Figure (cartoon, rainbow, N blue to C red):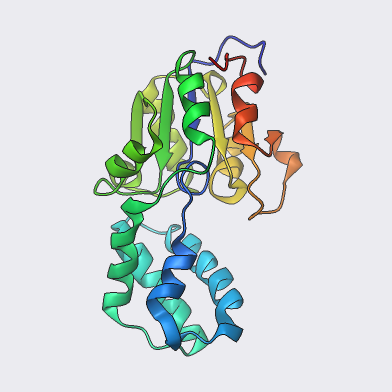
Length: 226
């Protein structure tokens, strides 16, 4: 991949790939004693599935995705849900920061490629999260702009149309096969990088390059570390 000079952009999933997206921690903290410790792990896993499911239909504001998924998860486990719970979780999102090493890797890459964000975040929170990354991005595309969420194929179609490129002119980087790498592969984006952060199983049949540390990315893409 490093020797291929055709890539015009490097695009990234943001939350969970670059930003430490701590929504499970936030939900557990907000629910407090209402969530029994014995249920916490199963509750967190189910919540991830419900948020994914909420992204599969027609677009709605991200705060509603958070609320609807949280409400459904609470109902399944018999946990009391309050509308203020989801609002408290949503309002915490802009305070989340990058994983270690992300800012340095992005700054190195930005010297060689225009960087792009493709995120399920909304317009209210995306600017602050991008600011938290501390690196220059040429384009930031949100679900609110697209009126759809990943993993819907329309999200990746929208990105390619916005950038004015073909599928083989982009490298897409994500820590999520289910949200990003599967739809990217379906649309013919052959150059994909899986930043394995350990929260989804590997799916090597998708044809990605695998890294386990973000510091590996500049060298993989032929960019200097200076």
